[in-house]
Length: 296
Ligand SMILES: C[S@@+](CC[C@H](N)C(=O)[O-])C[C@H]1O[C@@H](n2cnc3c(N)ncnc32)[C@H](O)[C@@H]1O
Image 1: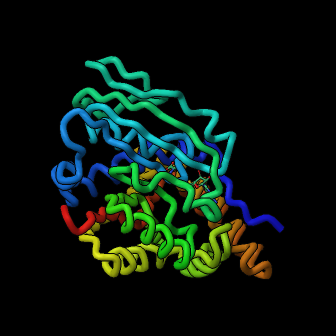
Image 2 (image 1 turned 90 degrees about the horizontal axis):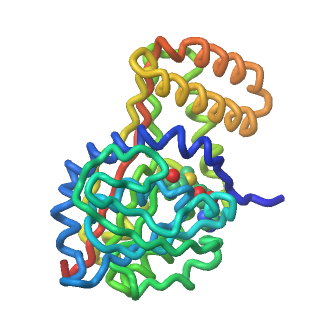
């Protein structure tokens, strides 16, 4: 059985506005702009960034305007259909942005040249140009990977003395308001499902952040982290209600797969959550991590 993990472009589009708000909060607490200035290449040299498991480009759309100036991105994913959605460049020149989606950030001009590469990161991590990069980044990836993969990845990064930015890693918190008697059971089964092999070996799931921090510190990195939670208030925003429904669908399906005997109660939970989505809120725990190599 293949354990290739795929994600639909619709799902990635649906989550992006909430990712953006969550990342803005975390970036402030991380003092991200100031800290990234420390690893900025010297005058005239463009930022060289590798985006691991890039999907349809949400990470670049958020980060490129904040890096500012000339940039060269190598964007890597195993899913050819997602990679096909990428343009060859993204730029913000004055108020003229050629972004796929409305740009919620009016920062300084930047110009990002983009090279797409189809790569299975579970097997071909070592083939990436680690030594050419100034920054290696990923968003919403770490819960899929194993400890072994994480150690390999940080090993490559440390050898190249490259900075790392890993954002929107789930930490296992799902706080629904109002509560439902089945929330805890769903969360337990869902987390067990998250630890299944997603192609990288036994997945770390909600433990990924702590594991990642530990591996980075052991490799000599200076590590900074901040919460980047989604706050989905279905009473205030129709798209937050819609994302709650999508999450309830996904969580109930995973929980039922994990414990087939629970399918009926998981489906009933999903239906209650769907019916109440415009009257409930959900906070989903995420963490952003920035790691700077020792010399910076
Ligand atoms: C949750 S999505 C995040 C996408 C994007 N970073 C974002 O924030 O919208 C996870 C991504 O990991 C990619 N992925 C999963 N397993 C992979 C593998 N073995 N090699 C490369 N990419 C992989 C998927 O195709 C998907 O694009």
